[in-house]
Amino acid sequence: IDITVNEELDRLFHGKMNADVEEEVEVALRKIQGNKSLTKSAQGAYQAFWGFYNGQMKRIKLKRKEDLVSLANDFSAQLGLKEVPRLTKQMVGKMGLKGVNGLVLLSREEEAEVRGRRQGGQGGRGRQGGSSASPNR
Figure 1 (spheres, one colour):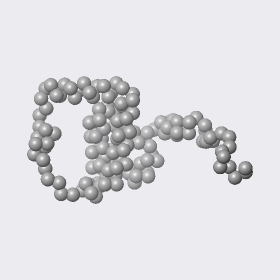
Figure 2 (tube, rainbow, N blue to C red):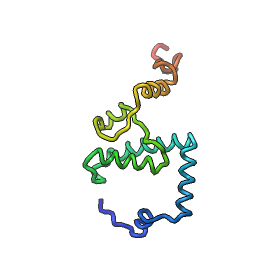
Figure 3 (cartoon, rainbow, N blue to C red):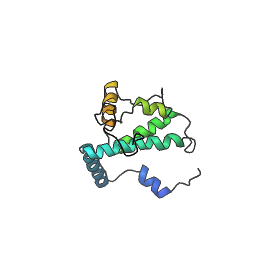
Figure 4 (cartoon, rainbow, N blue to C red):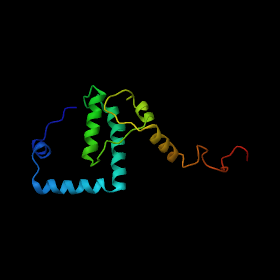
């Protein structure tokens, strides 16, 4: 992609922030870090970043997965997260990131907890009772 550089925006993003704006950004980041709902949303945005940009590496001219890890981890900090969100081994495997340096993975205990939440505490049994689409009716 050939995108021309907008010099005014470039100065805004890479230039020195004035003290008032910097303080407002710090206040906003503290709100994210102290709010469970905002933190969860930021973690979801981090995972969405992976879902999108992992498939766009050629388009954005990244050759190494480690470079994408670095961008994703920087993104998590910009979202106001204190720590880089941990990914499941399953997610890492499905995205072809197994063995890529810099990824932060969930522990086995944390993965088991995530699986338990997804199953709604049902132990993998799914919904109880029949459905109107049952072939036995």
